[in-house]
Length: 345
Image: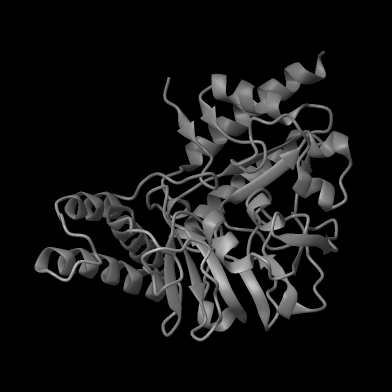
């Protein structure tokens, strides 16, 4: 049975460009902090990747601080700053903030004081895009980067967190992008790497893959690849809307990521749907990958005002450039078949 991967928001397949850059970096023996030739070669790989990420993210003139993940970037950006966020944010953001910003049924967050607020550019579960206010303290651009046009220099935020494996890079490497001159207190102290803001020997191999993936992602975006992805997603949306009057398409009244569809059929548990579709050969998820496997209602949908029954019945399909029209048609057909069995119980 051919499996169909429809969980791109959890993690993306590794891009060939990233794989090649990582393999090449494996043969470089030096430590980027060493002053000899081998060290300078390793440092050159890191510097090149930093330029690639900055250019792809529209962050020329900003500081790109490499970390182990967007989760670490959130800690570096937010620790002890007294920031505020909404309940639709990722757990890695909520843990550092007061969760008290309002959210409406379409997932839009209300912000009155951007200077002390954190806001996601796009939600990982629903795909809903936010309008970023000028002067925002921190933006979580993890899901938006590489899928929609985004320029850090124009987004109005002081800091942004991003992750390599959301755009075709390797797992285990991310970055915090900071407007030059912004005060950052190091959370990991030691040798003073990453401009004194994140100590520890750089993950040269992962960083090389991140840079190559970011450059390739920017090229795909410029070439309209994600417009094609959106057309396929719209086919899925239509199939789901036609499946049942009781099926709820989350965020269908606002702008979403081109690849993300979150939907619920109240009463049919999301984790049950995920398992049934997995057995049928489809990889989908019920909520964020960081919280999947935990039997609970989606906190994102609950924050938006949905009841527990609906919030516990939602699943997410997220597609990518290699997803075909036939893939989503096959998914919709199998899902509708399982829905029919659920109704007969």
